[in-house]
Image 1 (tube, helix red, strand yellow):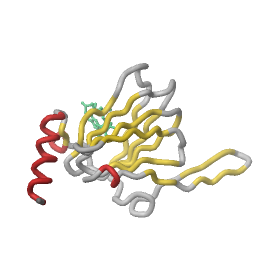
Image 2: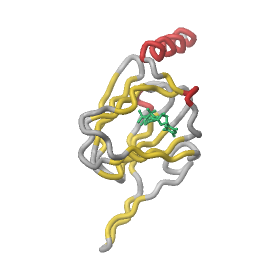
Image 3: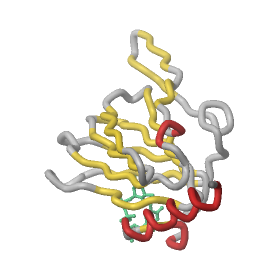
Image 4: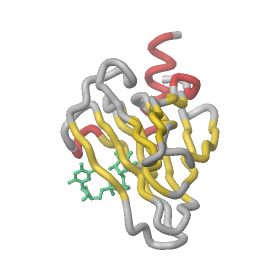
Length: 141
Ligand code: T46
């Protein structure tokens, strides 16, 4: 999938004197039914996470606190997006290599996913990912 299929999604933000509330509804704010939720927290300073792609999984990443960079790579182009607002999520479509880095202190990455955890859905080797991307493009040509 081309990298421009990965988009920032503005989430509802209800603010009153008590503070802020945002919410996400599957099929309305994200283009998939939510089948799993997980979150990254207590991230060790200086590390990166991710560095893999998914064959079919779709995800929405939301910075619940703090900030971090997401590097997206579709095998042809790369772009880096900094997530730093709790009412803006990043939708990541299938077949995108992603790496999360530059986490601020106390950052939390909350993730909504379209399927339960399945190790078979991962490309954890970048060369294998690139080979799969090339196969898709040559099949389309
Ligand atoms: C992604 C980035 C943003 C599970 O058992 N269940 C789960 O739902 C997940 C996500 C992971 N795990 C296990 C698999 C590994 O043994 O937890 C361990 C660490 O997972 P991983 O190295 O894949 O974690 P990250 O932070 O590198 O990647 C995760 C997601 O796996 C991935 O889909 O996009 O966060």
